[in-house]
Image (cartoon, rainbow, N blue to C red; front, side, top):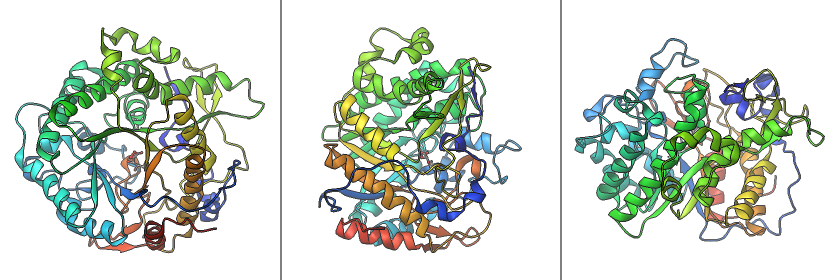
Length: 481
Ligand code: GCO
């Protein structure tokens, strides 16, 4: 199965015209949002920032860390747009107390980071690397000392290379290894970390890593999609069960990249509708349905069925304490009869505003997904675990006076508030991201931070959005545009 023209950037809109769209585009919004009753978030709403190990830590050879699939992928000629790698990134492995200061300095009460599996199990399984655990233990203590709750993601795409060599997520065994790792982390950090996120955006990892070859492990084999989806889901279920068995009192969730799939030419897009529905089933339904309903959508079932073993769907349907929702933009899909999947990236409406990164800006897509989670999946507690926008592509310094980012955030927080007023149980919001970092295949050219980083010195400089977000976290009152 191929999905014509679908790339990381097109998933969030369309690449063409990104530069031309300019920063001014970030100010606009489309799609009807209901008028808010008020703009005050509850006092107990959690304001946070999010990051990921591979994008920030650097020190990829320190203290016995094993190799990850991203080390291998980034070294391939042409894999990373600017030829960079993440061996330094934000140098957070050494500068984590500065990061913790920045989180606390903005008055944020939570920090979402991920744990690098290859630091804990350098060979993917077997002997645990104490020095790797120590790093996260120190990071957790630094956060707690500053009154910040750690939210730890267990798998943010950096699989130990040794597991990939045994088949990676196409192999059922990887799901069992994830559960071992989850249990080990719970035993070591569960005394202080109360909030865990098992997977980050399994759909992105499955599709971009295994079908499109744009992310590690860089495979282009559509036949892997079913096995990878199912084993990620299975690993999640096994992990939740293992963590609960290891310790009570934890709040355990998982994070999905939820994107409404809109048929090109909507609202009269009946021709493209089946392709959009097919994409939705693979991208959203293949993860939401097994978790909350214990079943795969029909379009996904055909792919995963050969891997399904008795009891798997019960294991996957482990109750979670919350769902993490990452949202950046909707995606537009068209029917492509020349593609075996019939799914192709479409063109968003011509008038749709774009961010400087080329992604369509439409907070109504976030409201749509939050509404669907509430109405179709039993209204679980939700944290928005990522939302934010990038500067225009550039090898130069970040834009410090980033009013476009404030506008983007304000518009998406209006969607969050609208969902809450309609009954969604949304407990918090994590800005993606704290510090400009290594944006996967886009290297250092794309910058999403509240804080800029000088790549030569590592010095951190808060942007206007950092000050704005700090004000919001202090009052909980969303200002008017
Ligand atoms: C994601 C990622 C982040 C990206 C962000 C911006 O989960 O998609 O967690 O790693 O950097 O989405 O593209």
